[in-house]
Amino acid sequence: MPKLDIIHYAVKRALIKDGWLITDDPYIIQYQKTVLYADLGAERPIAAERADQKLVVEVKSFIGQSKIQDLKEALGQYDIYRYLLEETAPERKLYIAVSEVSYKSFFIQDIAQLIIKKHPLSMIIVDIEMEEITQWIN
Figure 1 (tube, rainbow, N blue to C red):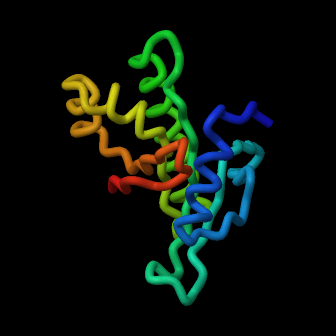
Figure 2 (cartoon, rainbow, N blue to C red):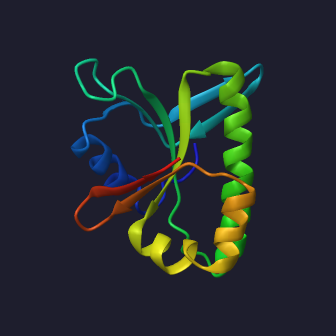
Figure 3 (tube, rainbow, N blue to C red):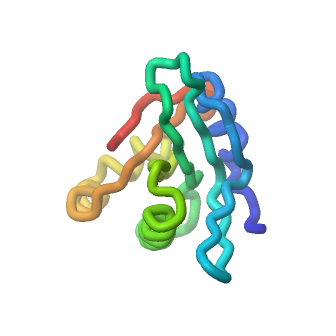
């Protein structure tokens, strides 16, 4: 299994605070003989306002030496997981979770905005210190 991202537990607690039930940590994606591990699987309890929603969340800190390299790797991983989930668990929506600091320092830059415009990316923005979700981007 891959090493957990440094913001993994803060994202997990933020999802729980937001009313999500963590069902998988990690979420196993199996397609034929291939097994991959996304960070989290989560569901909304039936009584909640977003009932019957199921998520797979990949947590990314974007703390590498090159944010562009981090983004390239995240987009590739996102695409692979999305394609596999379409086949194995089409009821689940895939998100990448990032810290609010990473989002405000990198994702608002022109190059990141252009890439996200051309390559739609569902994201969860998390205030890591408060362990709260500040924004959902679909």
